[in-house]
Image (cartoon, rainbow, N blue to C red; front, side, top):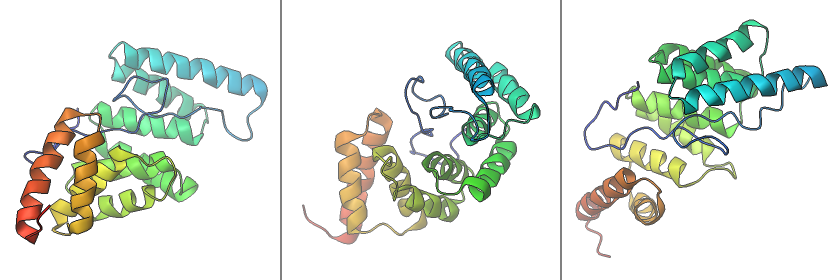
Length: 201
């Protein structure tokens, strides 16, 4: 399991898309590779259902094994590789997860989940500058939400780059983030930042 390496920071928030359980992984629509035929796509959909079931059962190891099997059979679909990276991180293979996501970034740069998930892993490893760069790119996507804004704000705070704009972002996180730990963190950081910047609200 990935562990947070600094004090008073919320736990990682892996990018999630329905119908997955919150905090599991994002595998998008899993439409199959662009060159896959109908039978291949149907087979992949069945495999992805199996992967989701393994995560629902609380077995990331089994899900990781099933995903690795898909990749070993030649599946290079970005959704499958992203899911493999997330499952690798969940099972403690963070270097493998980073490697997979870096490869995806080279091959499919521009996909929100890749920027976001790789940013989370860099941030988890204390590489706030690289994480901030990825979150900034992710924020340019229409899919970017409060979770990504929270990650970006966290990096700005850790890098000492927080300013009045960060104060406003923290206010939004405090008001709308679905996770209590992020709301508490945002309130504390906003109070500290307002004091440091001598800003009166």
